[in-house]
Length: 376
Image (cartoon, rainbow, N blue to C red; front, side, top):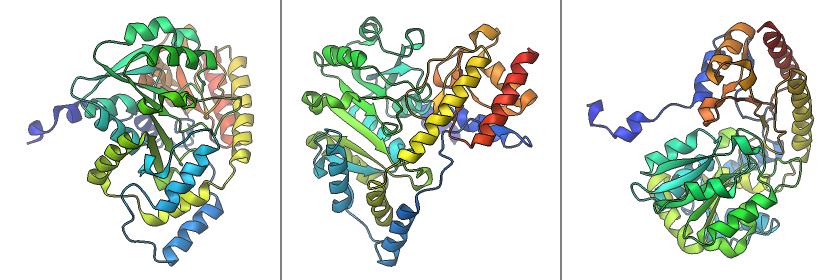
């Protein structure tokens, strides 16, 4: 009967990140630099808020879009960034992953195209294709991971329904410069194209980094996806939200209802407390780790566009004369260090190194990687 299942689902590939990490976990003393998960625990005040909500019996169905007080808290939080989203323009989701799934299932008809700058987070393609869409890659690797007007215009077609912008970017850690965003605004405001902003790393930045969401005059075609996972070390809580113009948010809320009904009440109360937490200490730790890893990579003679946010770096291995998967497998088996080959992000010739690991782990991993490179 498996042949009777959805062929798009059957063709979908498992996450390369998870495959590499699973292999690494079978190797004794392997240094994992592959997963993008904070090594911090969820702040105590956030965990306490969940406990108090449970003790108060807040375990019943909340409204589908979210607990009203939670949506109000998000609205106020985003207003400080300059984003005017009312509570009825916000939908609480099962992390950013469900948020993105809702967005593309909501806006795409079969065959509609979505432009995605590459390298990109690997799940994007599968989410778009499972929603019936076609992902159109826009290569940025030769332009310091910025989008150029020429390549944008070449990617746009009569079938273009949306563009997905992820800044700070996973896997590169690069932010789109203001000139890039201004160019995008100039071109996209001429067209009826949805702009989906995956801004899950926007609190983890080391230099000023603005989102396309700054252009409030385009609010009617803009959809912003957010997550609590990265800035608050809440990956296992699976909490996020989507923000859009009221008519669009209402439709996405309807789809959310038929996907999972709602987000557990007590988790939303933990989210309310998280919005009061300042992740500055985590950010400074990531900044220090970024500087260390980047200096080590430079010392190995590898080229790198310095990350401006998130907790990844994406050095080029093109000079080594091997593809990224070969490099990644050899580094894993010969040096016991797990990084993610760039091919899994449509970024061949690069590898992703996560630096959201302990200082000791990073030093050990960089030492092993340097010895491996010297042996080539």
